[in-house]
Length: 142
Image (cartoon, rainbow, N blue to C red; front, side):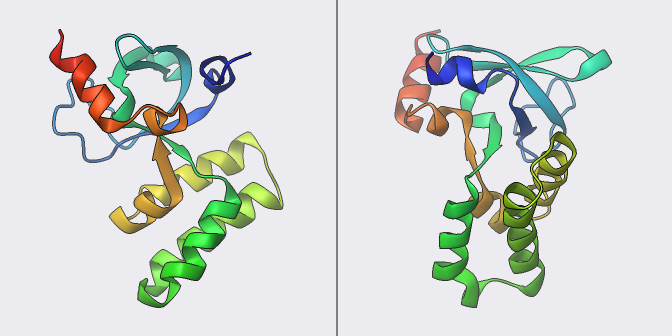
């Protein structure tokens, strides 16, 4: 099984600051229904509200709790209390009580600030090992 298959069914956050947002779902949480590596797209389902296609850099997944904890060690002194608390809660939700509801809560916390999003999530492209340059290259070929 490859990582594209493993990401199917994963809860994700649509980047809250999309420059182009035709589906008006920026900042919403959905589930990956499929990955198109060739086109650098992720198909995200929103339950009864349908599905939308996004570039892999516009869809965010949670970083593993250990990575968030490392980020807290490295950047904790520079973070606001709110950002530090949000990141700490994200690790607790992942480690102590992993569930779909807690993943949703953690993703909602990731949307609270740019710093929390930067330290607490990665794009689907990054999770698949696809660089930003490769994503842009694929989009330029269209």
